[in-house]
Length: 212
Image 1 (cartoon, one colour):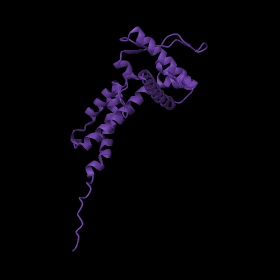
Image 2 (cartoon, helix red, strand yellow):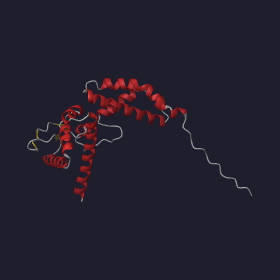
Image 3 (spheres, one colour):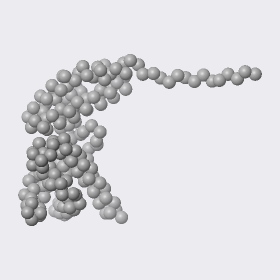
Image 4 (cartoon, one colour):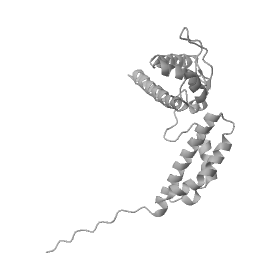
């Protein structure tokens, strides 16, 4: 008796349309960049370039999702760009979720009624005279707890990162912080991400202690 092996279905192949969508996205890129530049024209130069790059990343990801759903026919530069601009202004970034606990985040300040203020920090005495963030909806006890948490978090940072945190939380732009710290703007952007992760980790540890 001759055994007949079952014929397996061939794996689905990507169509040329799916394979080449990145090239078609690049055709929209000049217009996307122009729309973003107009939308952020009032931002300082460094912040404007960061915002434009974020819009490009957002539109690229959105275009790819439309291709996967078979809806590339509705992928136009204008709606993609306007949506990405709105996402940026709402504090959303590609590859990261909204975080209402990140005091350096624009979304945290907008969603939780936080206002960025000057620190009035005395470097000689190493004492805070005023906390940079005030929650308009928080009770006095909440504000006091926030101040204590923020001070404790700062004390746990290395000196260089603590100085960077002070500048950024005080409202300094990437360019301003880079000039004051003697670092490149890309390094300051990296520090901002590291500080965000450190603050999130600190918040998580604090919640675990409180729940214990």
